[in-house]
Amino acid sequence: MTPVNRNRLIALGALLFAGAGLGFIAFGNIGDNLVYYWSPSELLSNGDKAYTATIRLGGVVQPGSIQWNEGHTTLDFRVADGPDADAKSVHVRSLETPPQMFREKIGVVVEGTYDKSGVFTSNRLMVNHSNEYRAPKEGEEPRKWQDTLAEGATTATATPPGAP
Image: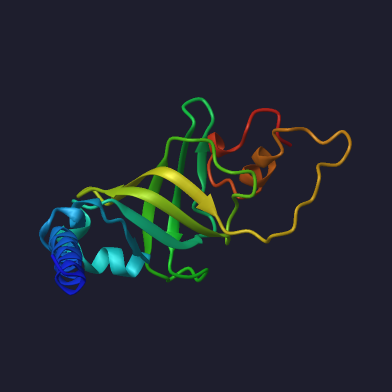
């Protein structure tokens, strides 16, 4: 085999390998593993498509919507397109302890699923924050995050025990 034929054979093999990989990506079930990133208005406008997908919902925590039940570690709040009271919003339920910086009017991204009852069940809650770190002050309690929930509480279950 001459070097020219060998190089052509290698090039043909590489093209076939690349084509097979591209075909797998294009026609395989890779779309089943996608996570969509939507705003509340996009989620509400997508109808049935929103019910079957894993979604990252991004927006702002709507003022007056935080309800924290410490006994069941259930956090209910609304994610809205903006901080205005009339902005489109989605009810979110999270079964995890929120990040310390979680509060009203903060940017959040929640990942989970949306059901036909209109509740977005979150299995991951992330808050938008600055890149500056502030070390805890001496004597500051580790459960300080509850104070931010107590400030935005709208019901009696939202206020942590022992909060003023």
